[in-house]
Length: 187
Image (cartoon, rainbow, N blue to C red; front, top):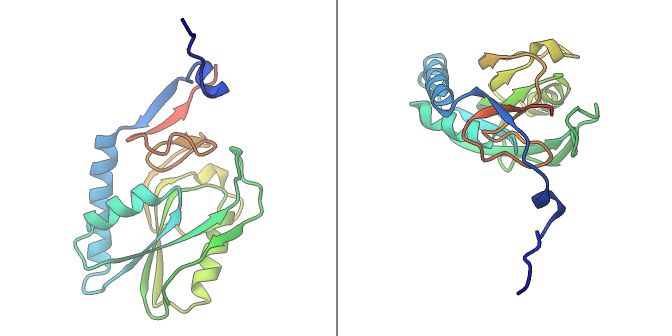
């Protein structure tokens, strides 16, 4: 009889405990409210929702569906975390937008706004392309972690400095697919 061995070292480790911060139901309700607010603020417009990959992917799609306007989607990708849980302080553009945003009403979608360094970098990049307006929508706003002031027009919740996972947000590329936002409990 042969013994089955784990394929990866991680498979032998116990999974960490995860504390739920916001349930899938709470997220859905709050995102609906945000979508309606955006629709009121941009009534008569056709906003462009720009998602910051990968952390905002689920939030952006749900927010677009919750906004009863004719919206279009685009994406960009930046990096400041790498595989860690704190920002390196250096922001790099990994993948740029596919479309011209001149004259567009942009809603920049972020999963979480933390130090503000990444958001500041993105806002400078977008404003240089002369959109009609730029509004920032984030599911989570970590105001206590701010290193540079940035505008947040729509925030699902303001939270403390917890490192969050789920609903698109990750820890070393894991946990993005959780339907809730949680915090890994220290053992």
